[in-house]
Amino acid sequence: MRNAFIDELVTLAEVNPQIALVVGDLGYSVVEPFAERFPDRFINAGVAEQNMTGLAAGMASEGYHVFTYSIANFPSFRCAEQIRNDVDYHKLPVTVVAVGGGLAYGALGYSHHAVQDYALFRSFPNVVIAAPGDPAETRACLRWLVANPQPSYLRLGKAGEPSFHSGIPDLQPGRWNRVAGAVDGGKQTLLTTGATLALGMKRRESAGGRLAVHSMPLWSMQAKVLQAEQVQNHDVVRTMEDHLQDAGFGSWLLEALAGKPDLISRVRLEALDSRVCGTVGSQAVLNAWGGLGEQ
Image 1 (cartoon, rainbow, N blue to C red):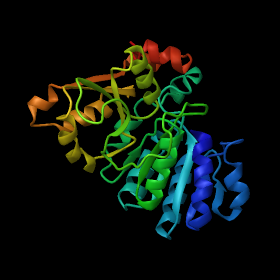
Image 2 (cartoon, one colour):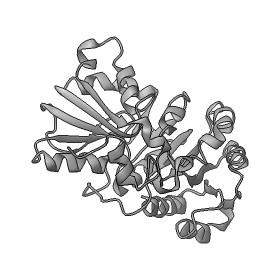
Image 3 (cartoon, one colour):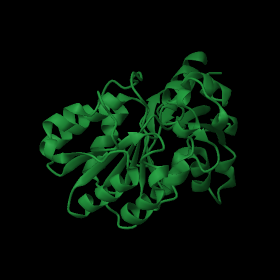
Image 4 (cartoon, rainbow, N blue to C red):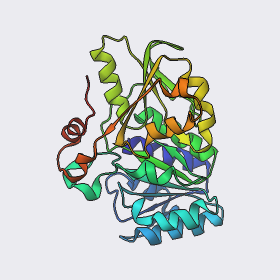
């Protein structure tokens, strides 16, 4: 996803002179295509993520759409106050890009586990969350974010993720993106966000292809109103996320169905157990340890 991100960002920046990229002294071997092509729109803010976010907000107030880029929790939790007060409050076009969502950097320990980030960003009323599940969805999310500049959070994996789309999907916040299976209805569907799309597709394979898989790469506080009409097309909707259950994606969907007990009863949540927070290991090992399996 990282490579798809920077390739698409360069393509978009070719026609949009207001796109800028600010990094927190990392991204080496990834961000160079942008830095070399647009040196006047690339800034290395150093290991100073809060300052990076304040800088981005200032540039955005002058007309730029700024992408801040760092690993996991560094551009998010470390900068929570600046995102809240400088970016979200003023509705500025700053996209916070976190590389290594979920447990992608699991071997580096809890400081690099991005398993509470949805909880943080979905509490900001003006932020759109973009959590693509493969490189094609990454490009689609970027295109939507650039076409609709506003406070946003782009959660990426690392690299080498498989692609499950034959082309670039047309995405809208809150709309389910059918990846495999029946167009409408069906006994059961998996609804994923972020990198769990790959786990969902493995689950479908294990079920002999009898399971429908949808993804929701774009979601926000405002997109809750679209959920009831989509849930009612399915007997069972099982959400899947590499995030703690509390205040995560599944919880967001349940909140969207508040007051509709007949629909709430159709939803099943699948998320990470909090025991992963104190554990070190590979992404696959920690996902399985946390309860995200293929069965």
